[in-house]
Length: 210
Image (tube, rainbow, N blue to C red):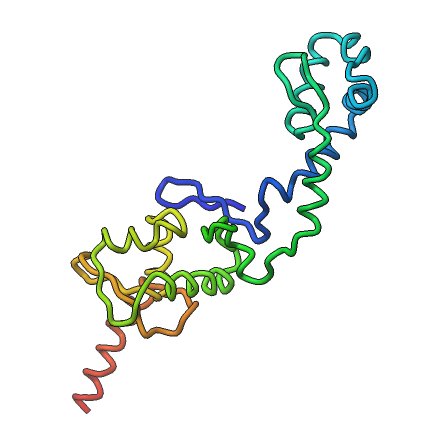
């Protein structure tokens, strides 16, 4: 799914994947093609492929491109050799325990791989970041905030989300940021709050008049 904000397209998914996790898809897609499957089999058995040599130039380029995308062959131009280690990597990755829950949106380096489309789950993810990056009662300028957030994600997007979800408060001057005491993980609709303020003020004024 994608959303457009401030003229930028931001991709958001619910099930993040890494290149290693998708490796098997590329292999299956490549070997589903009869020409690619025949060429790869000949390369494995004979280290050369008459079938590849006999293909028209256009089909030969497409077959080699598909095999390279799947990491099934290595080499330059048409001088290629089979790369059977890709199967071992797929098996090893399948055997590796995969993170569950909100942790699955973090890479092994601790950075956010994707932002969840589900707003509640995104709030949980942002809670984790806020607790790791900020200290209660601490006020930081924007440069310091950016330094704290850089290990997690693009700082502009992440900083905006933390403010939107009410996890971090920004001073009206924009010069300082700090953790808030708001309920965690709930997105704050600033416009709705602003619309509510006049009616609340009118209610209080009427009460005072009575």
